[in-house]
Structures are given as structure tokens and as C-alpha cells.
Image 1: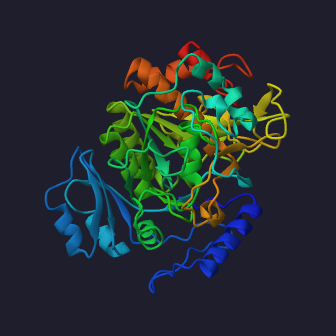
Image 2: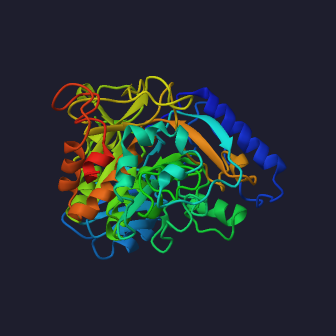
Length: 470
């Protein structure tokens, strides 16, 4: 997949300055063989995966002796799964071609990296030590008055009806990790099932935060996404307060997400018992010459669906018509068995005042009748989506400087976790049934555009209160 640069240079400049400041002023020195993260001029993450490959086998399972064959060719098996997929590293193109001739190998593709699906970080606010934890009444969260997004989806009606989520339901966040000690997230993340598929990040965690689980968030994206879906309602309210979170780190401190990590993450989450998985990831590639990648995606999504895991994905931020995307595979919305979410933003009010009750398709959001299932708040000029800022962020180190900080971000990355939180509530009602979960979310949505399926909003903007009968 091609790296997708940030569309707002302000974030690039801010992130680069933050990294430079952190490296110069922090009193914890880097190990001699570890370099601080860097951005390219375009803002795309610099990750070298040129020696990594994705391998698919005929039928199910991995052939006996495969790992030994990879080692003979100078490589290592990073991940393998009984669905018939493996990821390997350390191979030259010639060695990879030879591996492709191994028995039962049906396809081998070079790994690639894509960029997180995010528009911009608009603002940071310090809120001291936060408010009083109020999981029983999220409307008392310190910053709730400015969360137009929760009122837009009638989350408050669901809370009033007592629908706050259940710890028996697990939502996996496939992202940059989760700051599981942030006030709004402490006690909600099941660390025994959380995992990192980003080895370079693991090294940085061991240096800067040696007492932390590898899943801790060195970026900020995953923490923001997680707390939008589930929060203790100390600082900001999330869609639910009781749902169990599982952190699955598939993207690095630089915001780069290797395709191999995403594949491993989806399969791991499905096998680890996640009921819902949120992928606010995005990315795109040209179908011609890369058709094999589509096969890998379809295979893992079909497996997740078969074991009952609902997958929610962000539509992407290219303002693209997914009905006419031609030779381009844009985001995971082109994949079957998921819920694809476009983004709305308020036309007035929002962050700066009371929400007027009117929101439209955000100007950056992808759209298309064939792709979009529902819409949810992602933010726009009239208001941003506020959520937690990771206290272990190396991108925005001020978030770990003492007070509790929250971060305003816009993008379809922010719209997806609203739907994931609702999907977790739906699992309480209908169990591990992705088709039924998707149908209930669509049936209860507010129709904002054309009747039926609208290219901008799908079946409409989600309505949490209506979905749970609140």
C-alpha cells in the first residue's frame, strides 16, 4: 500500500517539532543503537518492510516444514495462522520467489506500509487532573458540554436508559496502541489479551517506558480512538463506559501501519475473543498488479466474520467517490463483511457553542452508495472530536508532562469508533452475529440524505438511543 501523507502540514510541523523537543530535553537518553523517530518531507512514516512478505496457502493451515524452509532462505516466520496465511521477514526478492514455489503456496506478496487515516490535530487542552470519574452518568464528564458528537448520535438517551456497555463484550482497537493508564481508560483494557505487532515500537517502549506493556501508545491515534468508543467518563464521555477494550498495536509511533501487522492483528483479535474490532486505518493501493493483496484482505475478513467478530472501518479522508474508484482499492470499505463509516461534521456550534442539531458530510470524507453503511461524527470546521491524548506519546510529549490533556482531531478515523461503541452494545442484544449487528445499526440510523441508501451517509447517521430503544 502507498503511504498516505497527512493532508495538513500543520500536524507535520507540530509533530516534527515535538519529536525534536522531546529528543533534546528529555532526561532519558536513547540507547546508542536507537534513533529517534523521523518524518519524511511528506509526513509519511519511514518504515522499511522491503524484506517482508505475505504468504497464502491453498486450503487451510501452514505446510509442515514451512518455517524451516523460510530459515533456509535466510528469513524468519513472523506470524502464521491456520486460516492459511503467514508473514515472513528477512528475504531477498530472489529468496521470496523461491519460497513462492514451495508446496501449497498459492500467492506471495511483498509487504507494504500505509499511513493512518487522519486529517489533523487541531488543538490540545490541559484539564488538570480531570473530573470525577462517572461511568454511571457520562454527561457529568468534565468536557462533555463540548462533545457535540455524543449528542449528535443520541448517546445520552442510551445512557439514560441504562445502556452503558458490558465488560463481557470486548472491543479490539487495531491502531497505535492504547494508553491504558489514562484516567478515562484505566481499568478498561484487558492487558492479558493485548498485544503489539510492531517490534520497533516495542524497543522504544522498553527504553522510554520500561514498566509499561508494549501496547502502550507512543503516537496518540489509538488512545483517541479507544476513548471515543469506551471511557470512564472522567475527562470526556465515550459511547460506552463498561465495554472491555483489547489493544492490538498494528501501527507505529510514526503512524505507519505495515500490511503484515494488520493481517496478524485481525486474525489475533478474532481468535482472542474480540466481539468487535475497530480499524481506523485507511490506506490505498492500485489493484492492477496488486490483486493478490485483495485476496489476503478478503480471506482474513471472511475468517473474522465466520467466528463472529464484527469489523468497523473508517471510509477514508480523500473526499473520493468509492462508487467510481476505478483501479484503486481505497481503504477497507471495498472489503466484504464490515461496517464502513463516513464522517459528519456540524454546520455550526460544536466546539465553540451549543450544537444546532445539524451536521453534513465532512468535506474530507470518502463516500459512495456501494461502500458506505452508516455515518458518524468525525468533525469539521464547526466542531472537532475531543478525546484522550496518550500520556506516553512521543509525537505529542506535552501530553505526558503532568496534567491530563485532551486532543481535538478530525477524520473518518474519529467517526468509526462511535460505531464500534454502538456495535458493542448491539452484541449484548444479539450476540456474536456480525450481519445482525450491522442490520440493527443501519435500521436505527437517522436518515440524513436520500431515502434508502445514500452515497454520503449510507443508511444514515447512527442513533445510539434508537438502536437500544432508549
